[in-house]
Image 1 (cartoon, rainbow, N blue to C red):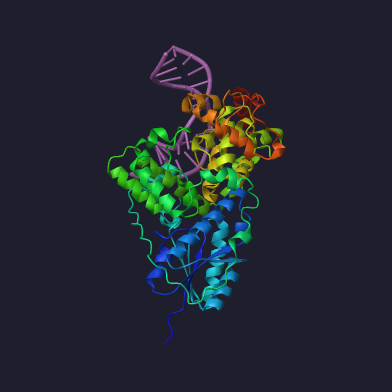
Image 2: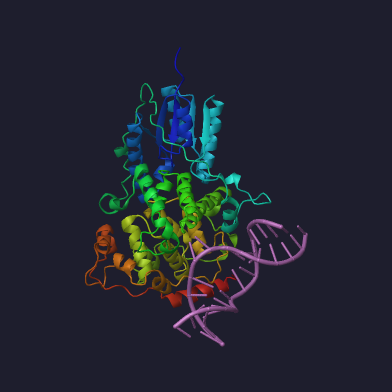
Length: 473
DNA sequence: CCTGGAGTTGTCCTA
DNA sequence: TTAGGACAACTCCAG
């Protein structure tokens, strides 16, 4: 009697062993498992930084799989064709994967599931990327939440499934199908500064993410409410980079946060709320996929943002030389580390869309190119929220004043000194490292004087408010 | 159907 | 010096 045919485990944004429902189900079946990662058009279309980061994550995860007696098959092509080919090669009769929720993934996965089923192949998708499936959270009238607070109230007392343990051993196929070589994918091609500049700032892989969650939930989480808003302080969890590739699961974060909350850690509930913000973004992109493409509120189609990314003001914004220290510090932090503190993200987004009257899509694209924690749902929601075109009651007059904000959240200038070298007698290493990171074409040097503001906070505020007024907002 | 409270992250002027 | 109110009107959501 021959043994049961293997299961293909198609991995995407779920590069972990623990709390992985699809993997656990495959292991529980007792069958051999062929993990596969497919470089499809979506991977090719990633921004420079997230693509580079993905390559490092895949490599790390392949090592972790090998330690369990398994491995990872790499293939290039359309997912359906690759999976069908592997079904032929391995005799697999099942394909398991973890669900994604952006519009492209949904339609692709639906088609794959239907086609495979029609061929008599078992195709099963699993949760794991979210705390709550989007269709499981409804308002009293059966709709979805367009406002965060009611959604928080609706889910905060729900039971969240206990995270699954990582399998000790993953049964490999008798014969491994051929794998492409990760190096040949050149996922780092567009990220020249990655290896030398950004790499030291990464938190790579499942083990490192778990360590961080443990130390955070036993330490900084109690001061989270006050400290998370101070950009010079390491007061956030910093786990977004791992969450977006599934190197840690939201369930694991939730349970760690909940334990701290029940232990009386004051800031823990705020951390749980942030996890639900991530859920909110995913539920929005699920129910209103246009959030990543067009104004979420169609009223804003009447508003004439500057859409020219080559505009000198926009270039100054991207290159961290607007002359507004909070903005420039944030943009430089982004370029050097692949991340930006959340407070700074709000400031730079407000400055681009309001003071510079430039389209949020320009900012969205730049973040997509530069962020190692880039996430399709969070990025889209964040930019639309900042611009005022998104789902929130953001009053049109709420224009961040980057000077007032700096006094409030960086009173002794630790953050701006960390990232801005010009005008300092002894600039910090981090501030100087920016000039090693940037392209020659930007023609910046630490010896130049710090630029004066391209648009002053007062002028920008007035201009934005009158622009809103003439548009009837 | 109607009602009424509420809406992540703010700023600025006035008393 | 500081605290409070104005700053649109609208949509969302629960009851």
